[in-house]
Image: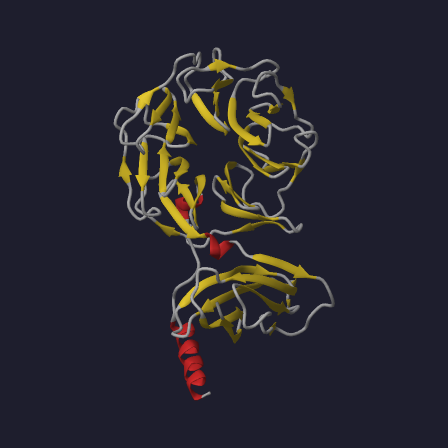
Length: 414
């Protein structure tokens, strides 16, 4: 008992003195990153003027890999097996050796101004600018040959492509188009007045569309109808969408990065560590356990565990006291649920949000992970903690909100 008491004292002292906060951290990566691609443990960035850079250690170090690249404004990437494709104003470049060398594969392209890629099985689709004979092109042999597939595509400025099952979507500057036969024919899927599409992303049957001026649209029926989902969004200019599991993130021009919560609360800003030109975000990418942001200032990264938690608000009576409950089950292996309660706090302007952190520490007081790091309204919350990557032993979890903090102990037994 005395040992546990001493550990609690050590933990409390550490948590007070620690200056580590959950936030974005800048890497040594290049600035003005248009897009990211992941192939195994390799992370690639395509820039507006510096070509392609490669990191093999989650963004800690970067190497320029441009040998044979015909154009250094790389707007799009695609990966099929060990083949990496880069799209630029000079067409399509292919690397079969992780960017060490590149070859141009433009045969059949009547427009080499590439803006987007999508992969469906062994089919590679490329979206181009609307000048000349542009639109969507299909290659079934890793870029060796291309065929223009635009029947029914009334707008050929294709800034974004996305695949959902057997459906292929094309985002243009005048709406979204759908093909159910690998581009052989297209139909408009524009109900809801979609214009100036910059990005598309699919999660199951949900299709998200990021626009240049009016935020994000959502369709749950393959584009038959669309709904604007802008609550909490920090900017209406969407530059990129990224998916991790059932989570979707949005990059904005001037508003940083936001995460969408599907429980009706809308978008949540996750900009801690981004400031100044860092909130001008051009691209997002998920690699391993990190979310990467390509900004005007450079490449930033943040652990997904800091910003993705299974948090569900529990309805009920309005609470009047802070409370951190004992995790259940306890002991546990490997997951457990932590419940905490945020009370109603009145200010001169009425009910206020509380800035809440929920962190897990080991017995030496070292921070293991951050489960919650955002503003919360009054209510009761359940947070799932997954300790699959941790060793058996005693851990502590601490809730902080304003002047309140409370710590409890839990036991992981594998």
